[in-house]
Image (tube, rainbow, N blue to C red; front, side, top):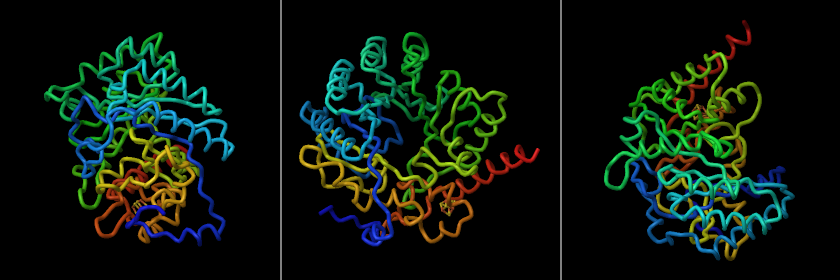
Length: 386
Ligand code: SF4
């Protein structure tokens, strides 16, 4: 049995009778190191209601690495997946040691029997030439978190002694954007701060020559609502990006909204109704749901399963996992009648949470999503009818 999941009651038997089948996981996030060398003000791991990280080992052991690799291989074989994505995450994954990561990833590739596309999400502070050489040897692509200008970045992304981390990250990005490491550069992850100047933020991100940018809405919910005009911020960046004669980078949120408006699908959890197929493996082997849910309440990610004893299939019918795979059936009544629900998709699951009421709500960014989608739709319409 799964532990009690109080916040999204689903009629799974009815859904299955109607033809719904769970989608296999295609992305596995490994929490290879549970601590961080930064103390970001908005961190959803260390500043959230969930303190479970304190109980877990700092470092993912060889045993858990091995079990995770075996389970990934088993899952891929059972579902006929030729390849899956593996994301090294933390805390800060580089604290596990680049040489150790190279060794573990190489061993995992040798045992899973399917193609592993491996990437890492790092704060960039420890990303020097030596680390990049190790990552290159194991073909690990690198995404770096950076929040725009030095001033804006250092307001939130601070070292443990309170100093900003922008200078260190800029040095790392200079290396990553240059040969011989450029091919490892996955992109930048920027957390939206409506208090910052959107266009200056965007231009600061562009100065690092990223192949792609992910704009992440700060984790918030109906108990902890966001502040500031997020829609205006996003629209300003969209207009700057969209108007450029040849777009200098990809911005996944905007591309997803445009694809969805044109009848396509989304590759992101932030918008659309595509099934979410991500499993997280904690440093002790626990299989969890996406850890953004930690921003809702303590234990929100737990499934009660562990790679040492359980297959990933045992988690596919967990109500919290299934709710992010059933599309329209998981939406709140208010979303079902919303004209943009197929594009918005009700928003990021973590942002729908309301204490006592659960996740069957519109995202707390509902008004922002509605405005952004309406704006993008009008820009597309104007171009297509020109
Ligand atoms: S815009 Fe609001 S009401 Fe419409 S689908 Fe998104 S969250 Fe639901």
